[in-house]
Picture 1 (cartoon, rainbow, N blue to C red):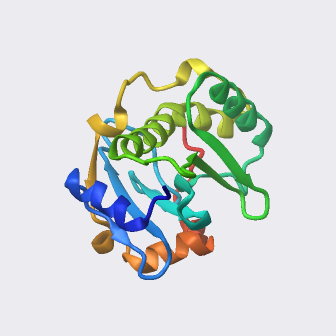
Picture 2 (cartoon, rainbow, N blue to C red):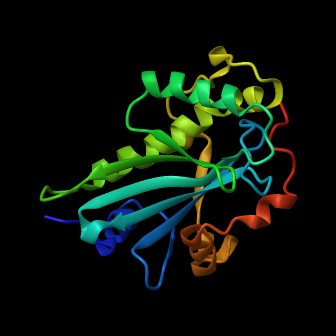
Length: 203
């Protein structure tokens, strides 16, 4: 039993979450607005928030939850340290992995699941969203330090059980980030707007 974008929207509606839905592609964008006083994470535009992209692939048999442009490594001189930290983190974490695009320097956190002929539930979606968001907020201090210094210090991992739930409030990116236009930029891989962002390596 494959999953549809309508089902995902229903799950989000049940949880009273706001989202932007793509008009044609099977994709939805959620916005986490973070408290800059409690987290140092900044997106590729330098803001205390991240956009979480949910995509239905392979005719509903595969689902992906990701944070496009989680970190930007295009001009980072210490990529090896960043990758070492990611491998260390993935060895001890569940669900979440990290993809790197060498063409533009995008480092993307994601969690994926093969739905195939199984029943996909609201609780599974919630688990994927929390896993990606929590992992990014937990790992961000380590990645920033590695990007700036070339040193891997896993002791810098943020200490919080559910940072995405406790310090983030969901907002509607249809108003905040252009809605469908924002989704199209993410789906097409156009994140050039981040070129003028504040330095993501600030420690």
